[in-house]
Amino acid sequence: MPQVEPGVLDVLMHAAKDAASHEAIAAVLAAADIGTNAAAAQQREALLAALRLRLSGTGKSQDFAATLAGDPLNERPASLSDATADQLEVWSAYAEAVGHPFVRGHLHHLLLAAGHGSKPEHIRGAVAGYLDAAPLLLGAPERFSGLRGATTCLRQAGDLARTFNQPDLCKRVTDDTVAMAERVLAAVEDEPQIMAGLLEGLRVQRYDVTDLAERAAQRYASDVHTHVDFLKLLQKQAPDSRRTEIDTAIVSALLAAADAETGFRRHNLLTQAATEARDRGLSELRVRAEMALQQTDPDSLGWTRIGGPIMLPQGLFNWARAHIDTATGLQDALWRTAVDVHPAMREQAADARAREGLWRIPRTRINTAGPVQVAPPADADDDHVVELQVRAIDILGYLTVEQLDRIHERFAPDEAELVTALVHDTVLPEARARTLSYAFRYFWLGELDAAACTALPQIEQILRQLLRSRVPIVSVAKGQTPGAVDQMGGLLRSMPAAGYPRDWSRALELLLVDPDRGMNLRNKVCHGLIDTLPKHRVALILQAALYLLSHAHGHRNPAPPAP
Image 1 (cartoon, helix red, strand yellow):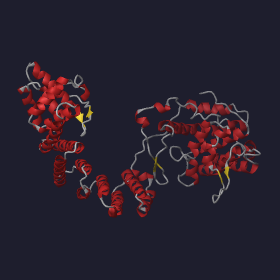
Image 2 (spheres, one colour):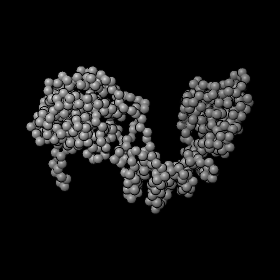
Image 3 (tube, one colour):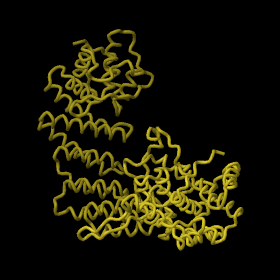
Image 4 (cartoon, helix red, strand yellow):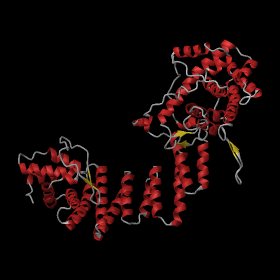
């Protein structure tokens, strides 16, 4: 075993005197002047390597990636397995010589994990060192760092004592942890994270934390999330007879906090309360939370909308009008507003799912009917890609307005001419064609509500008739379950199986019925969830009807050349 260098030992003891972490000790040791003694330099290197390593309570080593002030760590061992025999000998020498328990406990712990020397000696040396270090750390100049360091020492001491069956040390760990928990509860400062760590350590030591958890829940009741966390910890220890009482307290705390809040924070608390009530079988409280959610106006969530009008280049509008000007007649002009492959869906990046960073963060959304937070399935399309598709569809609406207005300017069709252009014996008989013609005439008159409400039922009827001969759209009665006919969403999702382009199927789904990430225009209009639609979105509804009709008539309008 090497001879301990007094100069290095003195620096180490001085560095450890008021330090609350091993990295703080290492920073002082690395910067100290210890002269040119080669043995001293070697021992300092070995000690810095030891201070770099982190250990769990059972002895598993972990790397510490930070860099010490003025002294890079990349030349020192990155893991315990990299430590040399000479370094282990230095650690062993200093574990016996150093007086500060914070360093002594760490060195014994490292030697125990490395299997170097006497195992019983290192077990008791590590546990005793950590236990003796805890009260010293509580006196550190930086209060929170000292509390955190003391909590870590108690946890590591408890893990080691329990793992290696040291009952006397286990009792001391429990007594010291309870004493520290009492101290934290009595302090003026709020330290809920420290208290949670202490209680978890006690629970692992099989100590009944019921009283402490109940007092902590009251002590930190001003923060509802901390309050709820301690109630949940209390529930793990409380007898079955108290479970309903604690469950009710958890949900009631969330509801009370929501009543005192506004905006999105209120919405989140109500959502959490409804979820907890559902999971805990508290039906009355669940109804209360859900009723409050239903009364939350989306405009009250406190969000600020940032945006402005879409400014498209004039060249795009000129191109849209020119595409109509080349039509041979009214029907051809109508079909030209709906190309076979939806422009917004035509080009999707092959590596859409490879995006990283902020674009890949899962996002919840607000259903404006509730509102209720919803999240797309795990296998759903990338959020950012779908957002771009919806935006592109929206932009397309402005060009569709230009084209429909140009049709009106050029042809000025009356009712009979529109019916003749739209009618189809199977898909859109004359009576329904007349109804759909009203939607176009309302659009040109500026009666946008009437145009949307008139066109939407016709779209569903056209789609149902298109699919009827190709895919099943009716489910027969089974037992007590009556038969049913597919509604708009199911019909749209059946389009690819019937041979229609998948891109248009998805585009129509985003436009009409997707409540999560799409415009959901059909449901918003038909269920009264929106005021008057802007003109370009009504134009998109009419375009959807024209696309379906163009297929019924066997018309295949290829995508026009780009402007």
